[in-house]
Length: 115
Image 1 (tube, rainbow, N blue to C red):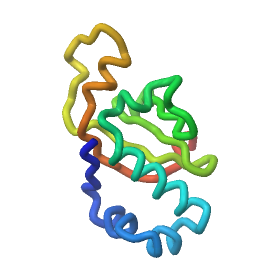
Image 2 (cartoon, rainbow, N blue to C red):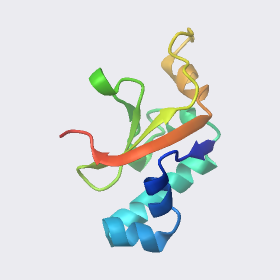
Image 3 (cartoon, helix red, strand yellow):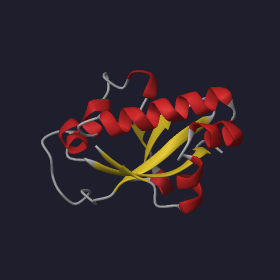
Image 4 (cartoon, rainbow, N blue to C red):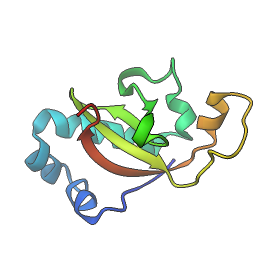
C-alpha cells in the first residue's frame, strides 16, 4: 500500500527510529514502526479487515472523525490515517470490498482518539 505523511513535523519524527524513540519512548517507537511497516507491506486496507486485523485492531472512526481509520499503538494512543481517495460516494458489495479498494493512505497523526 502507498503510505504518505503530509505533515512535515510528523514525517520528520517518523523518518528514523531514533527520532520516534525520542518523541514517544521505546515501547511506542516499536509499535509505531511495526504499524507503519505493516501498512506499507499491505496490498490494501482490506488486509486489516476484521478478523484479519490482529494486533492492529484497525477500525473506521465515526462522528467528527468519520472517514478516518485508527490503528492501535500503546493504550490510549492510536495511529490515525485517512484514504487519499474519497470512495464514500461509491457503492460496494460489502465493507470488506470497500476497504480493499483503499490502496493509498495518509498518516495524519498519533493521538488519543478517545479524548
